[in-house]
Image (cartoon, rainbow, N blue to C red; front, side, top):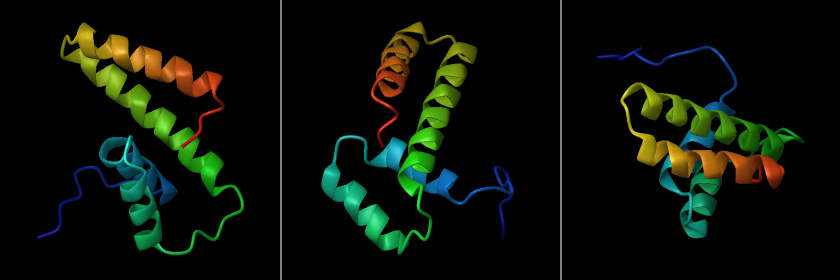
Length: 91
């Protein structure tokens, strides 16, 4: 079976960024393991791309929390978004 629910054509770094955002936010060893497991990232701007896509994931989550009525979660995400943009979107 193939599930195409969220399948899109686009930059594969979007998937890496989402995995980094959701599964390794405060665990450097997991983050490094995920990146090592992915293999060589043949792109000079890969860190900037991942940082931008992580920001997009946070914004997407903020919008979802707004739709389901979770202002408590949005407050934390708002702080995260502000910090990300202030820090230059570090991954």
